[in-house]
Image (cartoon, one colour):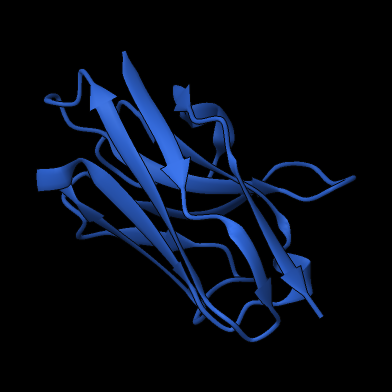
Length: 124
């Protein structure tokens, strides 16, 4: 079992930045990839970014490429999502998820453990 807890959400103006954090705990010694997803009001959950167990491989949704950066610090069991040049359409609840595999993945059903989410609101 792996538990993940997100933090760092908030309200920011368009063009601003936020950094989300996600701390993993539990049975993390076997290695796991981490991902960020989001759900905007009235929309389905969508993939944002994912990082491999080693941090050497990443995946991004096209809509965030060049603006968001995912990274991880295994010594702290933490993954980060640095979000720059935020847009109102980035407003959503952001979820951290862990999967029992080493490679990054964009499909939500590949993830086994989910956090409760953190709200990000971008004002225009």
